[in-house]
Image (tube, rainbow, N blue to C red):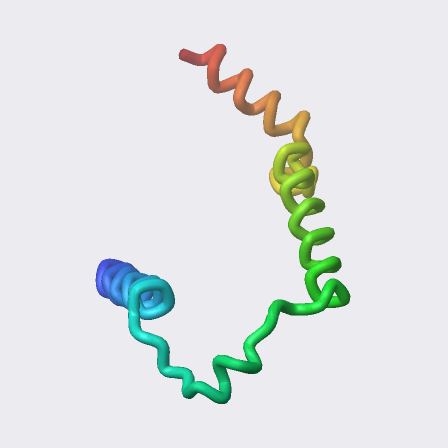
Length: 83
């Protein structure tokens, strides 16, 4: 069942990328004239969230995913000493 789900996901992801970047446009001329970039009121918070998520990933937040970073380090040290 998981393999079928993975295959369907990969098919739809391929379809999404192909139609978005390589497919023909489905907009009429009137719609194409009114397409514009989002204002900074919308882009600013997204940029802030992006920067914070990258920093959080590099710093290892949230710290309590494995109880704590120290307990994770202790368990890895214990495993390494057993081998």
